Amino acid sequence: MKTPDFQTVELKELYRYVIDHSKDDEAFYAYVDRSKAAGRVITIDPTDPNRWEKVDAEIRKRIDNSGV
Image (cartoon, rainbow, N blue to C red; front, side, top):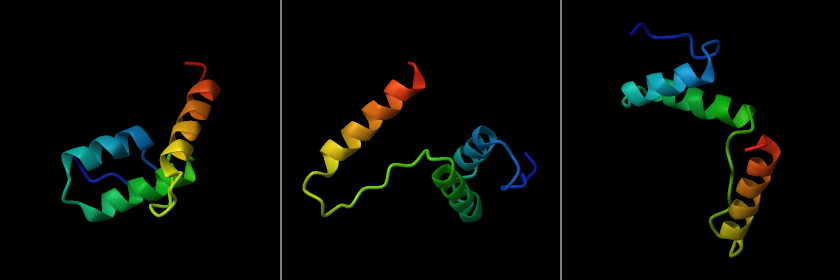
């Protein structure tokens, strides 16, 4: 597979590229950055004692909003 343009390729394709090229740090960081920008990342504070409840609530909210 030819190296895609990490900024323009569809996020699904970039994900597949990252899985197939796990040593490509540039691709990985591009995927993480684009995933964050798309609102697909849940960020937690590892020192927050309520972190898992917050993650659970966020996941439930996203499921409810997706119509699944």
